[in-house]
Length: 595
Image (cartoon, rainbow, N blue to C red):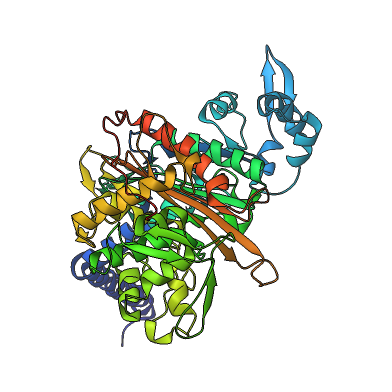
């Protein structure tokens, strides 16, 4: 038997072997785990670790500009800073000079930056006291102002960079440009009206992104992952609006409201040769810098959204239909009484009581005779009357390029009652926008061809490339001969004996038509008036069409006195701005009466 001493020696050796085996097992487990981690799972784990260090940020570019036809900036984006305070950090602020403390804590910080911000020192200090990690103390600061604050290096004073949309010309063309809205800080703002809304995608461009690897302190690892996709800048929207013509027209419209007491006045100035709108003016236009100061109903363009009965300006369509269908010539003879009753017992009357008048077709238009116009319409079927109203654009939006454009009201001719089928001949029983009414005259001015009107000329990319806005193809509405005859007939309107001699412009031949129509008042009854004049100049070589629509003028109800003088002034300014030479020929007018 082994001795007791041998047993005592063997026991530690067994324990040592057991410990060794256990250690080998542990090491084997670690080795297997290490092989699993570094071999089999290495790529997955590395990617997981990398993902925790990767940061992706969106790269944006400033919203593109809106400019007038000559490149004058009407809307642009600038950088601004909102400034906040970390109240916890600012509490530990200390500034020393030559070993002495000269400023400390919120009060000391406020004493330094209050003069820069133009704020009360004690009030600013009060905003800096608390437990918030960020509280606004100032907004909408220029980069120059922020640079002054930043130079003070006060811990806890932190910037927030934002983009701000500004409109250098205040309310100039505000009804066309529109305005922005969104978050209080300015980030994420979007167009809410006008061009800002209609061309949001073109102005914004496409955001880019940057993905980078950051270290524990949040800094970018120079040798780490870095991927970047460039942002694509938006395109400037180039309007057809002429800043100077728009400005003068707005000034003249404001005067007209004051002179006549009108509720509102709208003026459209259109280039007859290409359909481009040189001015689109509504009285009381919104200032895009402060849209809340204007009633919500007045923040858009009433020229394309508000509808009204055009009245006698629509007689041009009746005359066009009569000439085009061959049922009359400018010299056709009619006897126009003060009142006239149709075969379905509907009685119509002229604006002023008079004896029977012997008028030519040109005379009916020049004197704006309702009874004469109804007689002309008797030779046109009801369906034909509807067809010409539709051809001239009534009942369809023009596609001018602004949000909220109305199509007007043109009911199917089968739905016209016994009176409406006659009233449409002189612009009642239908409703149009100011732009639609202008389009009738633009067609005549352009030799009978419709060019789709537009307020946007095109888009200018960041590299200077310009792309015109797509428009519908030109459409012939009436013959060139009919258009020429109508122009001459409308010249009679601005001569003595016509309804608008106040529209005549020295040195230029002018053609046009007045209109006066009843409109619904606040109570819903026909208690208001729309007085208008739409003219073409020069009549011998048309360049511009100008419409003036005055809603409920108080000093007069007639387009020849409420609207024609405004036309004269606006058209004169536009012709001079465009350097259109005066007329060199004398008109050969049609006689208004016959014997």
